[in-house]
Length: 458
Image (tube, rainbow, N blue to C red; front, side):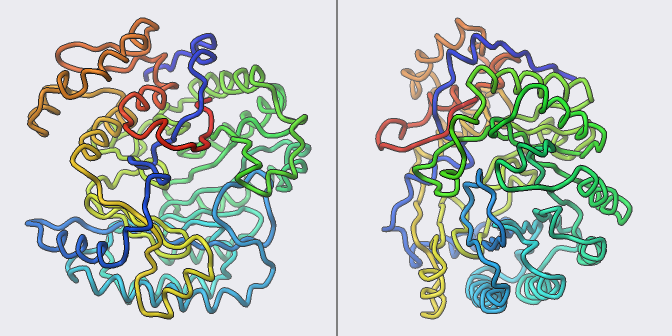
């Protein structure tokens, strides 16, 4: 197992704000000139490919009945569960409209339910949603089905239903086990509760369990997070996402309820991150990249070794060859060389559906330059290296001529030991892996062209 080297001095030097590259170009570059007509042309184009891609379906469920102060997701806070019925009808109409545009033999190989929280749906409503998907799309028998779960909102009976519906991956939102931190972000859940839900999932056959943690939350200390990590390691989820909390109260209103004076200092955050990497690696977790860890044998690690790992709006994905179809409020699709996003408000989303049109709010068709740069960024962020000869053969260009300015900009990273550039490849070092965002920014043609607030690298 390769061990990530933590160099706090280098991390301080490169700790600037930048994109997380769940896409390239990133969402702020999307344009409202991209409309339903353009999307339909693109779908038709993909149908005419010699071997059309399978589909990966993402369904966004925006509702939550309690607010977590750190949250930056697109969500609707409400205790009115009667809103689910009308929303299900809107989802059905959207799925029917877009499914008719894909050739029927294009099966769905992956389904992911996110939010908000899908656990806002009760068991009957979840059953109804999955029945709709099965009726409307051709779902592959070996389809990977995953769902984000709030441990406070699910029962053992719900987990039994998930396994019966074919879900084989779940993600549990934990963030931190320290009670004072939980109170400070309005998300109180005991270790025993999470342990019970995780054990029930394993007992009933869920094959892969992810757990989300956040470092940099109010009142967190190195000592308190050490205790959280000890509990996490005891539970031994298959995957872990350890996110850096980005405090952007100007953009995300709930964060205004967090007292900035309670946040760990930059030095404390670095110490917490260092602790996290060290403890998880000692416990057998491998650093995938961009805050993600997995145990040996996990399919995500296999995909990384085989060169098929990709990054999308849900993080890292093993389904690199699928067209991503986003359904619901704010959902983003990545079909062929395009991105398209649904309206981010329920009112605008509902209005589009009621007018019998696909709810395309904005998007973009990638230029050749976008595609070339996306390929570089994807290789670096997923695999920490780029085979230059293979890249030149694929894109029919001279890498060092096309990226002459970028290669020159990499000299500083190379001098700091973050990567090595040779005639054959670019290879990111163990120290550089934590700063892969910074390296990718060198190849981002849009950086600095708009006044956009990004989270910091660490």
